[in-house]
Amino acid sequence: MAANFKLLGGHPLWIRLLSLYGGLALFGLSAGLVIESRLGNFPWDVLHEGVALRLGDLDIPVSVGAVAIVASFMILLLWIPLRQRPGLGTVSNAVLVGVFMDITMAIMPDQDSLAVCIALLVSGIVLNGIATVLYIIPDFGPGPRDGLMTGLVERTGKPVWAMRLSVEITVLIAGILLGGTFGVGTIAYAVGIGYITQYFLGLATRLRGPNGPANATE
Image (tube, rainbow, N blue to C red; front, side, top):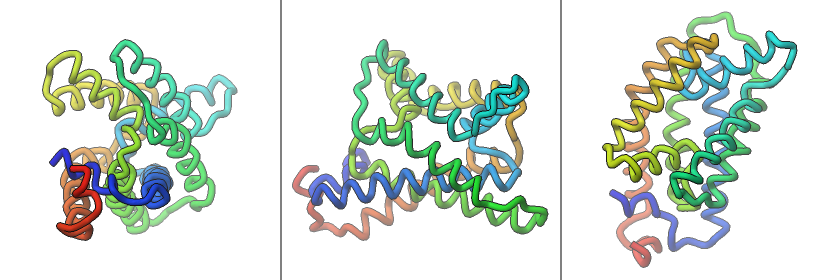
C-alpha cells in the first residue's frame, strides 16, 4: 500500500503540481461545505471554529480559515523536536486549505433546508476523500497534521490509529469546549473518511494502470 501514495512519482512535474494544488483547493472547499452544513465539522475544524468564536468574543475578528492557517504553522513548530521535514506540499497545505475554506464559506448562502444541509455534509465528506488522494499521491510531503501523527508514531512506537485517535479526540474535546460545532457530521466523517479515501485511492490505482509511469519509482 505504501507505494500507492506515490502514484504520480513518474509523471511530469506539472501533473504532480496540478494534483497537489487541485487537491488542496478541493480539501478547503470540502471543509467549508461541511462547516456551512451546520451538522458537525471535521474534528480539527471543531477546534478552529471554536478558537475563532472565542477570539470574536474578545473583539478580535478572525475567520475559521485564518485560525486553521495559524494552527498549521504552530503545528509545524512541533515537527522540530519530532525531526519531521516539511515539503512543498506541507507548506502549501498549511496556507491554501484555510484560504479555500474561507472562500467557500464566504460565497455559500446560509441554509435553512435540512435536505440542503445534509447534501452539503455528504458532498463535503466525499470530496474530502477525493481531495486527500489528490494531494498525497504527488508525494510532495504530508500536511502539518498528518506529519504530526507520523512524527508521534515514530517517536512513541505507538500504532498510527492509536496516535491519530488520541490527538483527534484531544482537539475535538478542546474545540467542543470552545464552542465549535460538533454533531452527526463529525461522527459521520470519523467513521466514513477512511473507507472513502481508500476507495478513491484504489480507483486512482486502477486508472493509472499496471504500466503507469509511477512503476519506475516503486
